[in-house]
Amino acid sequence: MTVHVVTLFPGFFRGPLDEGILGRAVTEGRVRVDLVDLRPFGEGRHRVTDDYPFGGGAGMVMKPGPVVDAIEHVRRADADTRVVLLTPQGRPFCQEVAREFAGAGSLTLVCGRYEGFDERIRAFCDDEVSVGDYVLMGGEAAAWVVIEATARLIPGVLGDAASPEDESLSAGLLEYPQYTRPREFRGLRVPDVLLSGHHGEIAAWRRRQAVIRTARRRPDLLERADLSGEERELARRVLRGETVDEG
Ligand code: 6GU
Image (tube, rainbow, N blue to C red; front, side, top):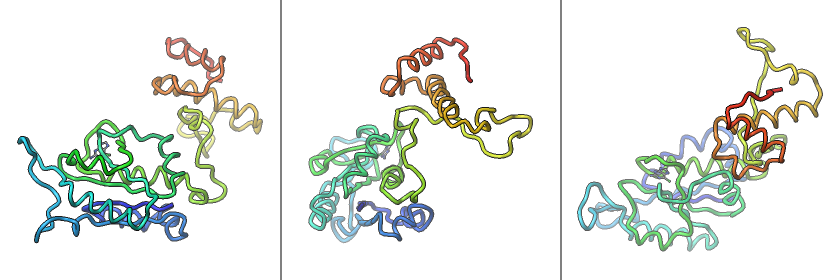
């Protein structure tokens, strides 16, 4: 897949792109990241990209001209790219949106700095996403989150053995507890079932733990989770604060 990133800070992405799994995916040609510096699209001798808000108020606003010129520059080279504005006002980015983006072939992530974008920029984008209900100083860190979550779903990026979508996550649940050696650490033991070698029992224990953990920590996820009747009842009991068999 190709990801174009429109940004005033292309250097933000260079270090992380040279490292780790994403770096390898880029080297192997599975992911192409095209950093588009917004500065040359700025206006006047100083290549200005922001200005004072009409009507007054604190902070600066991204000017429409430079941002839309940069978007059109990308679209001329890659007509089918999906242009996504990064803004706390966008639709919440989640695993489902990452899946959608991974299937898109080409994405253009538009990062802003300052207090916001001129409203007219929105008409030139296909989508808007937010990575959470907090305010960042700019869209770059949000763009990196989108790139990470999306790229790992591209076939081959995680290597052949790893499956990018864990079963519990794709069912809309939190991950079950994981353990590795040693069997006992400072008096804390690994649950016996995981040492039993009974794959059916292990799978059942993990699924049950995922349901219990989701009910305790993220009850908001339960509504959309893919649960059996029995699992729904287990979740309801956890929510009511009843003691349940943890297996
Ligand atoms: Cl996408 N951008 C900025 N600037 N802040 C955010 C965000 C995006 N998502 C959450 N906070």
